[in-house]
Length: 339
Image 1 (tube, rainbow, N blue to C red):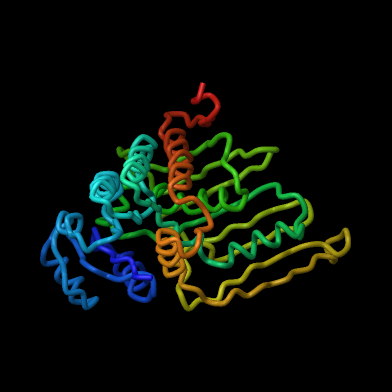
Image 2: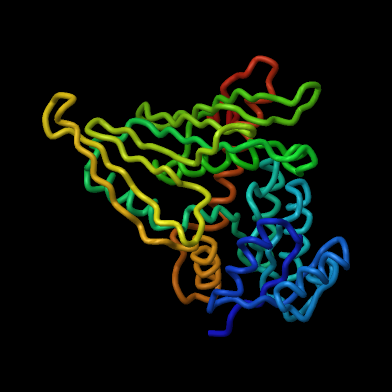
């Protein structure tokens, strides 16, 4: 199999730190060209990664040797460059969040399907094996009937000039535990309630909390924050136990993660037992790049439908944002909207 040749649209920190190195490590991918709004920036990135070709975003789109593009521009430009790429016959891996609104997400997917190419949103954490271990423990009945999910993602404050203060932190960090709850429950929520902390005299959020209501009374509580002690965890609570992860979303490639299972051997406090399962280090960016390439080439089927997953996530994110933007936050019920 020939590796997929990638063009880079956007010289972001995540592209530099994680995605381009993963492309270069993958046996199924190859770095072809780097594009930036600034020729100097593109040249600098190309030099750092020993890439012979660099130029503008349009240069990447028009390059016939490019099979797939990676888009890491500001969120409000994702749809524009995704649609340009898919119309040009390129597969697209777009950074999360894919877009601000559901309409744009639908247009992105429709463009990909019309042009017979694939479109994936970059939630790399989904490809880390620790989550598969969590799902295995649930399937084996280790915590009984699953009742709730609690996810937290927050970190110390970013510098004032950071782009996140334009895009907002629901789209940057709140999206992770929201996606994780959908992944663990393996279904879509019925409704969403979100309360956000906004920058004074601004519509930009820097933190918030959300409640997602699922079938059969299951709930997911989500907390995200800029300017807090670093946490990136979730726990799944069942009738007979709890499963928890301390490093669920952003995991360095050399980091050994731990899945903790807590349960009772007797019906009292002293009967509580813990089991810890160590998961060997994995580069979840590399795992994602490999899965993307192998799905496209027909080498191996991906664990989920890229385009449907992007739409489902966009639907829930739109609901959370819609709820959080109300003067008095109101729940967003999908059934009401569909009517």
